[in-house]
Amino acid sequence: MHHDRMNEPVPAAALMALAAVLGDRVTTSRDLCRQHANAVSWLPVEPPEVVVWPVSTADVVAIVRIAAKFNVPLIPFGAGTSLEGHVNAPCGGIALDMSRMNRVVAVRTADLDCTVEAGVTRGDLNRHLRDTGLFFPVDPGAETATLGGMASTRASGTTTVRYGTMADNVRSMTVVLADGSVIETGTRAAKSAAGLDLTQLFIGAEGTLGIITELTLRLHPVPQAIGTVVAAFETMGAACEAAMMAVTSEPLIARLELLDALTIGAVNRKSALGLAEGPSLFIEVHGARATIDTHIEALDSLLRDAGASRCQRASALEDRTRLWRARHDAFWAVCEAWPGRSAVVSDACVPLSRLSDCIIATQADIRDYSLVAPIVGHVGDGNFHAIVMVDPSDVSEMARTNTFLDRLGRRAIAMGGTCTGEHGIGQGKRELLALQAGPALPVMHAIKRALDPSNILNPGKIF
Ligand SMILES: Cc1cc2nc3c(=O)[nH]c(=O)nc-3n(C[C@H](O)[C@H](O)[C@H](O)COP(=O)(O)OP(=O)(O)OC[C@H]3O[C@@H](n4cnc5c(N)ncnc54)[C@H](O)[C@@H]3O)c2cc1C
Image (tube, rainbow, N blue to C red; front, side, top):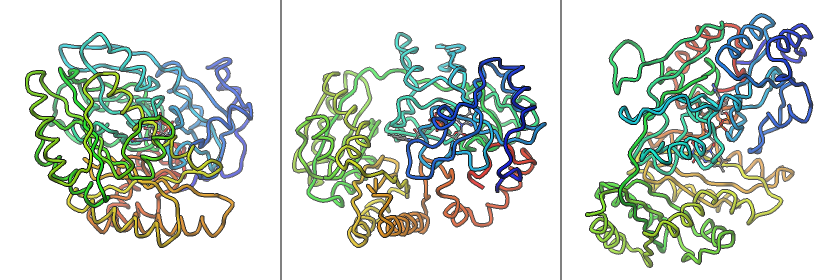
């Protein structure tokens, strides 16, 4: 669904109206516009024509009304770390940079919740919570990702196996609709049976249905004790089988990540960790001080029985932090290991029982299509990324990469899974969404038309 205003510049009257509300928080600077387009992925860079910085919900209402009046596309922008061209402006228009809406509005420890403006980053929220004994668990690799952007991509991360995705950790949101009206999607209650679930409707909507200005989030107690085990295996199949056994038998698992031998090599070069260079599981357990050691022991013997050639434990904060920092930096370690190449990241997610088959078939494809593609995965959720390192100027390699990605998406769907576990559809996965959603796709289109009939909100994404 493209916007009908293709190739018409933002009218001068719209710029004047924006400046009247925002003063110097409006720019048409080419450099700043460029910085507000897709920066991370291999997709083309399509900058907006204008960038605005709201500081309140009232500002967002005024901006949306101006965009609606002049029929100009509006592309919400958090930190721009999304991977499927989500923040590109294929029809031009205005980037709505939420980074100055960065206040933590309230932390209510008794209710295990907090309310934040949409531009607060996940890193800043957890720094703010440091002395409360609580934390916000969802941790996509990008530390600078904003809570509004994370809700809009239905993000998840290494702790999802225990604490869930954004869909499980948002109680309610303040949303500005395409006509400038403001709604609260839910309440602060732990549950509600009142009507349709509008919170879930806007989670994962990628800015196509409304602008999130505030979120009320669930918080979790910081665990009393944490332990980490890293286990290396001979084959990816053995590592996947071990992951499945671990997740079904060990109740304290809070993180369960898989890194293949190529990724471990890259991580070792970047972080000098000296890890055994085979397919490896990084596992973290969260629990009570009195019992955590028993669980680590049980996990250790489970992994060895499942064929782990080497198990390494880390319980000191410093050691754990180094290991998990290395895991979070795995994407950058892979990029550094193949300098001059660009990363194209797949995101298949399948039922756990199909994970091993899906990864093994994917590795066969990587070989058959002569690609370089290290694999990392949130395997506790059945989700993995093949990071294809491409030379975008190599036409044949790009064609092989596209075929590979299409086959992988279709394989995941055929296995009862999804073409994207956490990154979203954006511009890159619209065809696969049509295949996955089938007769549900027209329902999504009908909702989009009902909420944004002029298609001004992030046109060219999802639909
Ligand atoms: C190294 C690396 C690792 C990553 N690892 C993970 C991972 O483990 N898990 C994961 O889920 N993702 C991961 N990502 C992807 C990315 O970090 C997430 O998609 C993140 O949620 C995007 O947040 P953002 O603030 O950067 O959003 P942006 O990229 O700015 O925006 C994302 C989408 O949300 C919309 N949007 C932004 N703010 C709002 C708002 N306030 N209201 C309405 N719409 C809005 C935008 O229009 C866009 O469609 C990774 C990315 C990188 C670079």
